[in-house]
Length: 212
Image (cartoon, rainbow, N blue to C red):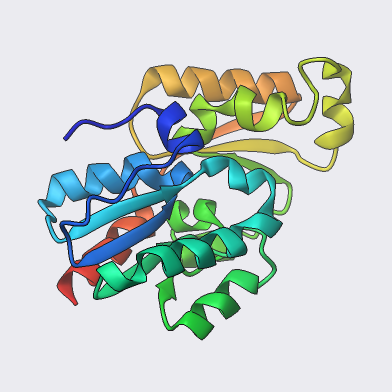
């Protein structure tokens, strides 16, 4: 299965094919991992529709975007599953999904999904800043430039002064990505930790959907 470029998944999403009975409505930041799991497990019952990953820079827009996508696609599918956690919506997405009668990922955000919800909660790492494979590849587009650090790098200390460690939650064993994440930590003035998570709870969630 060909994996689209981040540019496509982030800015344009991935059109649903309409061939499956179950629609996965996913954040573009999870798209490559979802596609990889579909390929690895031979799940041909899923269609995937991705919302732009840059919605994470505007959490207030996530719930309306999900609601609009559900309304647009609902007649085509027996089931829709939302592959977002809360992601900064303050419970708004969960309330909308409950009202619509559809399920979504548990947890505060995709970091907890990859790290495993129970393990993530137990660590209670309030001084950690997290990167995933996607956010490592897109660090400049999603962190550095939106915060204006490309123009005023001295502000890194202001923005990240309450953090101590950049934790790279690695979905793949890629030395190049590890080097990029380590560089990001240095640019932010943070200690670096790499934690290999694989696909974490995302794999279990998709397996449960497929089994049902």
